[in-house]
Amino acid sequence: MQKNIRLLIPVDFTNTTLDTIEWALSVFDENPVEIVLLLAREMEYSMTEMILYRPKPFLDEVFTTNFKASIAELRQMYTNTLAKIHVEVFHGNTVQAMKNFLEIYTINCVCLPPVGLYKPVKDSFDPRRLLQKSNISVIEMPLYASVAV
Figure (cartoon, rainbow, N blue to C red):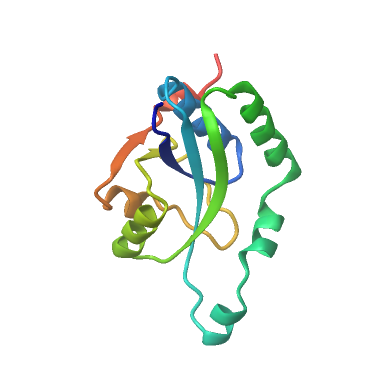
C-alpha cells in the first residue's frame, strides 16, 4: 500500500486555490494525497486575545458556501487521489514557526499558486516567503496551467 503524500497549499478561498488544488492532484495523480490548506495569520499580541482566540468564527466568515461546494466537487472528481483535505490556521511570522508547523503536520511538499494570483483574505498574509525558506520541497503551479483554454 502506498503512503499518502501530504501537501500544503496556501488558501485564499478563491478560484486560485481551487485551481492550485486541482493542478496538485494532477501532478500527484498516482498517489493518495492529503491536502492541508494553510491560512496564515499574524500572531495575536495581547494575552487576552491569545487566551480568547478561536479560529472557528474567522473560518466561518471566510470559508464561503461556494468554496465548500467546490471542495465537495473536487472530492467527488478525485475520489481515488484525494484522501483528505482540511484547513489549518498558522499563527506566526518566522521561518522557525513555519518549520514547526510543517513538522507537526508532517508535510511532504508545498504547492504554491502562481506568483501574484494569491490574494490573502482579511487579517491573513501570503506565506510564500516563509515556505520557501523552510527547507521543504516547494513546487509552484505554472501560470499557464491556471488559465482555461
